[in-house]
Amino acid sequence: MGLEITTSDSNSGDTVYYLVAMGESITSLSQLPSYIIFDRTYIYGSTTASTEHGIGMDGASIGIVDSYCDEIVDSGADAQCLLAYNGPGPFLIQNNFLQATGENIMFGGADPSISNLVPSDITIIGNTIQKNVAAWMGVISDVKNLFELKNAQRVLLDGNVIQYTWAAGQSNAILLRGVNQGGNCTWCVVQDVTLTHNLIQHGPTAISIANPDTGTVAQTTQRILVQNNVLNDFSEAKWGGGHGWLFYIAIDNDYAPPLNNIVIDHNTGFVDQIDIYIGDAGTVQNLQITNDIFQHGSIGGVGAIGTAEGTPSLTSSYVSSYVWNDTVFITPTGSSSGTYPSRTLWSTLAGVNFTSISGTSPNYSGNFQLTSGSAYHNAGTDGKDIGVWDWTCLNNDSAAALAGTFVPSPGCAMSGDLLPQPPTNLTVTVQ
Image 1 (spheres, rainbow, N blue to C red):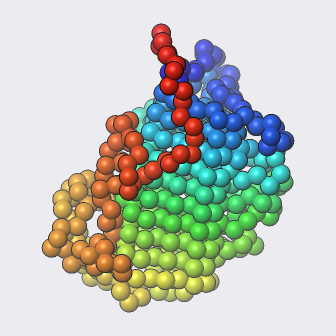
Image 2: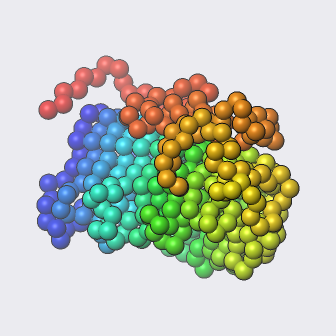
Image 3: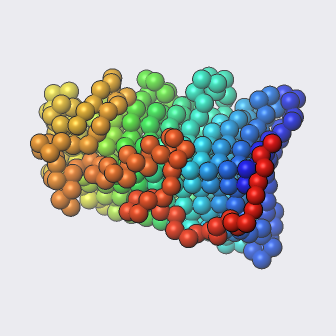
């Protein structure tokens, strides 16, 4: 509690691999560190030497709360504020500022030393997760995703602000896929992931959901819920990468198991190229796209390689089954583009009747809640607003995340009793 953990290394040729490490090579669950909580801790790398990892969280019952992590920078390798691949969890990551050049938070990325281990019961709420545009864009070559899962299950990502990345090492704000990284983790999986009430903005691609990407066996990516999120300013023109997409689904090899049970529901998004891109290989089964409001990109609303946008892409070889209902696409004229399933709705930006909106496409600001006079108010399949409807949680939690004042609130992002509370009889002097 109340510590600064940093490095005095100023040699530009050096690499500090971990500021905090635990459990990474332990082969027995019973020997892992457990009940380790970092509370109001300042994690800071060197401004000249490389720093690859802030905190390695390979343990049981690990908490990172009310803390600050920055200057985790490496031009030639992935660098993470928070990393775990050999810890079973549970993990609580709450009310932190996290800034790193690689994956700000990653689970997986190396094969566990403990057989059949999958990091589990991961709660990530009320954080600001971002990259330093002014200092790193065009300077650091190995900039990657803001949040990535390669081996994780039962994950809640709720009430966070996830922002600022660009095409360099990779091109996603969020990447979800099971990966057998070193060839010895056939059980590696990404499953049972919930993304809710997040403000996700400023990058090439918002969310990529993929089947395993290597020739070695891993388990299918499955049961992913993306609901009540704002996805703003995903632009090829501004952030590069040949993307400008909201969702990239089933992106890797056709020999891998198909994606299964992917639900995209009640989201509001703005993009300059395409909303949902399906391909390049692999398949997705049980894909649900419902109750969303998306700005129709210049390429299309839904697309797949070798097919026209809309229904031809949804019925292509990349999709084995889907549900589609009550999705609004915004076009300059409010007219339809391509052939889409029934209950596809078309509108101009003004015609949606957001409470207030300003800015230049696709980077908007304002209040994206629908007015009571909107045609899409209470018009979803569940009787709620199309697009985001739970504005109380999204607005309150994202504002608190940006201010560093997030606390769980009933009905919104809750951490429950995942971890023990710090003792109450300690005093701390910060010098």
